[in-house]
Amino acid sequence: MHHNISNNHSFIVTKLATNNITTTNMNFFSLIFFLLQHVHIFELTIATAMFIALRAWRSKRHHGLPIWPILGMLPSLLYGITTNLYEWLSEVLIRQNGTFTFQGPWFASLDCVLTSDPRNLEYLLKTKFSSFPKGRFFRYTLRDLLGNGIFNADKEAWQRQRKTVSLEFHSTMFRNLTAESLLELVHKRLLPLLESCVNKSRVIDLQDVLLRLTFDNVCMIAFGVDPGCSQPHLPDIPFATAFEDATETSMRRFITPVWMWKFMRHLNVGVEKRLKESIEKVDEFAESVIMTRKKELALQHDKSDLLTVFMRLKDENGMAYSDKFLRDICVNFILAGRDTSSVALSWFFWLLHMNPQVEEKILAEICRVVLSQREGLKKEEVVVGSCLAFRPEEIKKMDYLHAALSEALRLYPSVPVDHKEVVEDVTFPDGTVLLKGTKVIYSIYTMGRMESIWGKDCKEFKPERWLRENGHFMSESAYKFTAFNGGPRLCLGKDFAYYQMKYAAASIIFRYRVKVLENHPVVPKLALTLYMKHGLKVNLQRRDAAEIDKYFKV
Ligand code: HEM
Image (cartoon, rainbow, N blue to C red; front, side):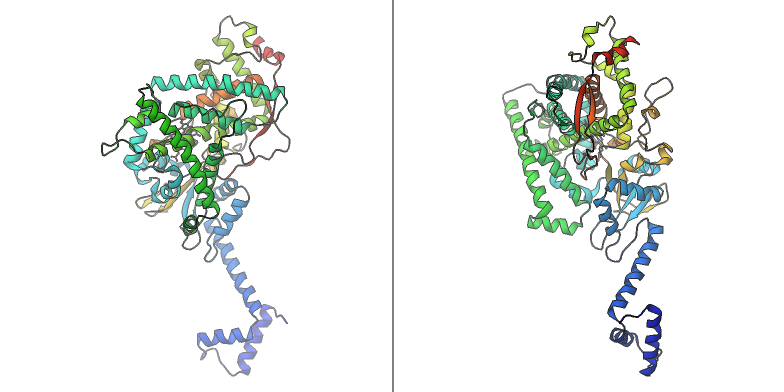
C-alpha cells in the first residue's frame, strides 16, 4: 500500500509515539535506521528524486542548464548531441547573454567556459592573446590527428610555422600558383564533370565533388602533388573517407570524459579504434607525399611548394625536420585548405537554393563584371557552355558574390567552435572570472545568430548587409565575424579561400542552376569542420542562352 507524503508524515509521528521515542533523544543514525524500517523505499526514492530534480531545475535559472548530482550538466549535453549540438548550444548561450560555464560530471575534465560575446572574443584573440594559448588539454586531445602542426601548436612551435607559411602565402609565386591550379582544376575537372552529370541527368553530391576539388587544389599548392581526386570518374580515395572519419572521431573526444576515451584508446575499442584506423590511413597518404617529394628533391627538381620549403628548413636545434613533423604539416594543411572552403561552398549553394533572388543577383553581377572588363566582347565568347574563364581581376570585382559567401559563412562558419586555455587568472570584459587553467570554447556558429550583433534579421540570409550604398563590399570586425578567426592567429588562407570559392561558385552559377533534391535532409555533422551530415544531393540544370542574354543586354 502506498501513502502520499502528508499521510506519511503523520504515519512517522504516530510510529515514533507508539515506540515511545522522541526525536530529541534519537540520534541521526537511529532516525535513518527507523525511517528505513518503516517508510517505503519507493516513496523515499520518489521524494529524493523530486528534491534533486527541483534543485537541478532551479540551478538552470542561474547557470543556464540544470546541474545534476555527480553528472553535472552532462544530461543536457547528451540531449544536445542527439539533436543539433550547435543550435542547442546557441540557444543556451543566447539565453545566458553570450557566456556560460559548463559543469561536467565529476572527474571528467569537461568543465569549461563557453562564450560568443564579441568583447570576450576580442579580449582572448587579440588583447590578451598570450594568456590564451590552445593549451595542453586541447593539444593533447587532438595530438593523435594534428600532432604539432600549426593548428595544434603554441609558442615558438606555432610562431616558426606561422612565419614560414605567411612568407610563402604572400609571395607572388604562390599567388600565381593558386590562380593557375584553380583555372586548371575548374576547367579540366569540375566543369566537365558537372557537364556529364547534366547530360546524364545524374544526381550528384555537390559537397563530395567540392571536397575533391579543394583537396586536389590544396595538395597542388601546398605539396606540389596532384592526387587526381576530382577526375571526372570520381576515383575512390580511401584517404578522403579516413580523413573525415578522423575529424569526426577526434571531435567526439571533446564530449567524452577524458578517462573514458583514454581507457578506450588503451584497449583499442569503439570510437578510439575507429580513430586509430583512420589516422593510419591518413598517415599512409602523408608518408607517400613526403617520400615522393624527397625523391624529387634528390633529383634536383626545382620545386617551391610549402612542403619543400619546410624540408629545406632547420628546426631549433639546427636539424632537418623529422618525417613525423612533415606529416603533421601535411595533415594540418589538408584540414585548413580542403574542408573549410568546400563545406562553406556547400552551405552557400544550399542557401542559394532557398533564396533564388540572391542567385539571380549573383548571375547579373557576373555578367556585368565580365561585360565591363572585356571591351568588344563577342556574344559567342560568353555563350553558355563556352570555355569562358574568369580573370583574377574580374573575380576580385564581384562584390555581391563576396558578400553572399560571407553571409553563408556568417550563418554556417566552417569552423563552428574553437578553443583556448587561459594560463593566468583573468576577468573577461563581460565580468566572467576565469581562473588559470580554465578551458574556453568560443562558438562562432552562435555569433552569427545573435540579434545583439546582427540585428533582428540575424537568422536571414541577406548578402546586402555586407554592402555599402555604392554596392561595394564592406568588411566586418573579426570579433563579430569570426569565421576566419582574428588577432595573431587570423586565418592565413583567407584571401586565397575567397578567391577559390568565388572562382568555383561563379563558374558554376554562370552555367548551371543548382537544385537541391526535394526532402534532402540538410543538417551539420559533429566534426572539427561543419560538414553537411548527408552531403548535398543536387540536380543541375543548364542555363539557356536567353537567361544570360538578358543580363548582357542591360
Ligand atoms: C572558407 C575557408 C576558410 C575558413 C572559414 C578558415 C577559417 C580558419 C579559422 C577559423 C582558423 C583558426 C583555427 C584555429 O586557430 O583553431 C584558420 C586558421 C588557419 N587557416 Fe584558414 N580558413 C579557410 C581557408 C583556408 C585555406 C584555403 C587555407 C590554406 C590553404 C587556410 C590556412 C589556414 C592556416 C595556415 C591557419 C592557421 C593560422 C594560425 O594558427 O596561425 N585556411 N582558418
